[in-house]
Length: 360
Image (cartoon, rainbow, N blue to C red; front, side):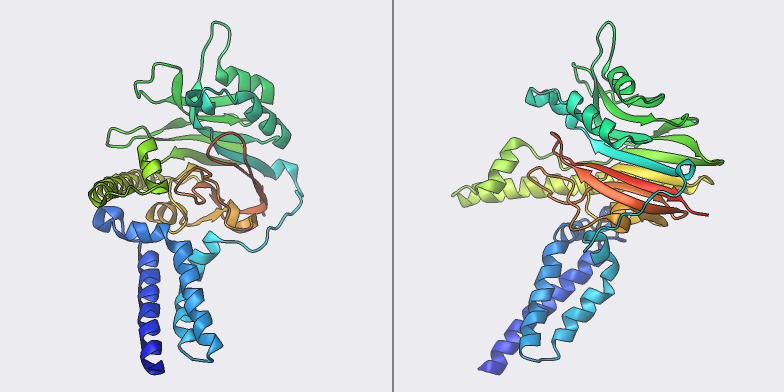
């Protein structure tokens, strides 16, 4: 009987290991080729805990079967390291001329459609941090006869330069898009065009630090676009089984469409970057966790500000779901990370900030 129970438990342990390896595979297999794997990327933290749980069961019994989950976890240590950091590290700036502070923030239109207007609080936080570059997604530029949201932020925070791109998404109020504020002159500027009708965008601009030219990308990738009724369904499942099935199918299909659109957007951005001879930064809202095709494709050969100097899970999305780290600042390997922090304002995304220094 005991042998049977051990075999029964071990069979579930093997399933957990297989699912963990499938989550690893989701980082290099495009959702355009096999989208179901992307769900396992979302489940990655749970799969880590599940394998640790099985490892613990076997360790208590001094059973060598504990090695199976241990080896599986060690094989994917890179992904674990990108998901969770045990301690943060802060270093001091040694040369201000070679250092820069960068902010990325999904402002969620400054709360406009929740009958709020949180620009002043955003400005206060930016002024406290004294950044050199700020990249904002879901930016809403409201104009009046004498000023605009862009002018207000530039004047209050002392930025000399900016680059704004508007999405023609049919909104009647304000100009919706992405913006880069900078203390450095922004030279060559433009868009990475997505071959589809979407409310998303990727913009870029070149700037100089020391004598070197760098490009910074500010992007906002496809979201799941859950509606209020979807969140209500997730929070409280209906009693009727047919209703459960119908809603579940709807949510799965919406997530499938988002996985595939993100993959198309990522491929377009990566193709654009591959033509560059200029080192580049990437900031923005990926709408995907580290264990994903989007993150692994775009972060290749770059440092992740959170991995270098962050701690914990680094959760940046604080809405209902997906509740993960989905906002990133990535930078070239010739820079050393000095500090990484996140700040909760009124948006459903945290503002993330990093200080880096060019190492010689």
